[in-house]
Image 1 (spheres, rainbow, N blue to C red):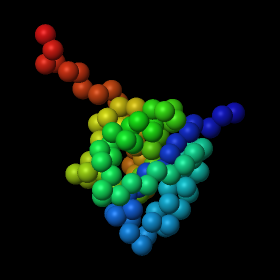
Image 2: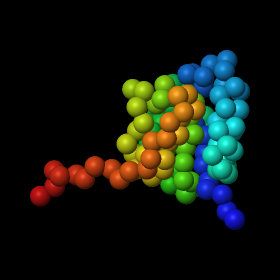
Image 3: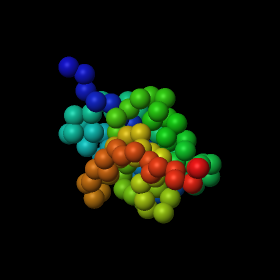
Image 4: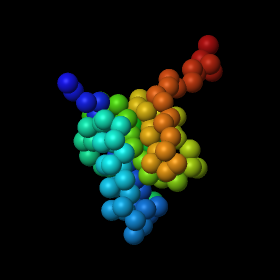
Length: 110
């Protein structure tokens, strides 16, 4: 039986001294939920277009979920639409699952 796959994601500037703790929490929750955690992606405040880069990694690896310590690791404390369009996003604290959903339709084309 193949487990669903996932990656971890965090921003080192948000985690600070708690980065190792956050990585361990991601691993623990992924295991508890039955995911094969393939790797953890670490960006920082200077990473250009982090949501786009994360979406590219998710798409290339074909993972089912992204585990993140909290919404504080995303710009604006919100799950990026482009990420949740390709994978579920699961936060450690508070523990919550943002299920994969299609991006809103572009109604501006005629």
